[in-house]
Image (cartoon, rainbow, N blue to C red; front, top):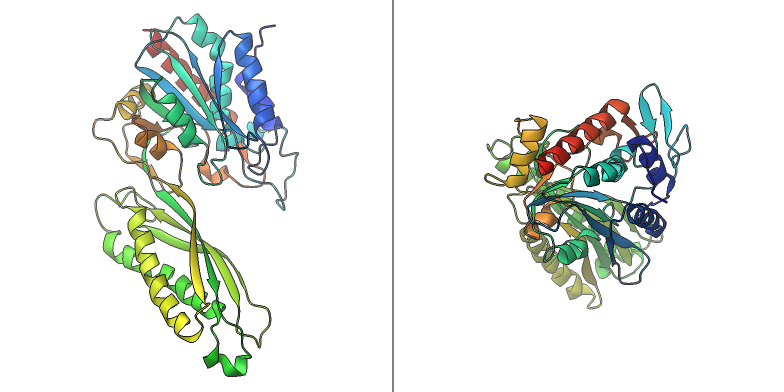
Length: 387
């Protein structure tokens, strides 16, 4: 039986699946597969290594080059400990707002596209629309690369539109994100003999301070440059969010670990920051091992998400500006999968309904006004591909 949903109804269905990144997204994907199949649209899975999560992409319209990819991630961030007034996994409408986890970030964009599949088919488009749904964006954009690799030989698109919440403004650049976990192994002694031991906590503290010093250097170096002024803040940031270590106040700590993220301007190379960090850790490690040869510092790269670079006369930017009428310059500091699509050879832009200020928050919501703006945008896209 052919299935039909309004955009609001489709959003409610997608939100009803608890796709917090620690969970599988396959139940949601199975629903989407069934829905697309009911309209005669074939879809393709690109699974993770253990088959617990999967990307999905599908093509609507003719087998032709020059179409448009609509990209959205299926996972959401946790609701644990947040003071929600409603069930996060149920869309509740109140005073023109649609509450629910993922309404803003970013199930609405995909819900609109899915709800418009019947209109896409009816329009007899001359160029196709491709839907691309990924997993694990929220924990490092882990799913999209394998999907992009699978699509690239088969899908020659004019543009990729990543539908993250931008209030339907055309975002042509965003920072990259490098996520690290640093583990320090020290040497335990009584704190009265601290000079004979190696405190993992003290060493970790020096490394954390390095993050702060490097960020201050960046601020002085780039905050007034024309190419960075649109970013907030206009420099690469380095931040340590979690630190754990030590066993007692009178023992030099044997272990300490902390997580950090570098939000890197798209004009800069995150690997250069990583290399500078490795050089400094090597200096500290040599000092540690002069006291205790077993002492060491390990750096784990949890994720490396490229920034979205402004394209010169990019076809995606040109297309979306023509549809929206937005000719202003917009950049954001949060990360998306846009840079990964650019690395895959696609012209890419970020534009979608909703406000990023609502993303990840308790009582996350999307306004009906923004939902309708997203619907209008995608209908205009369909008309353009049919003309």
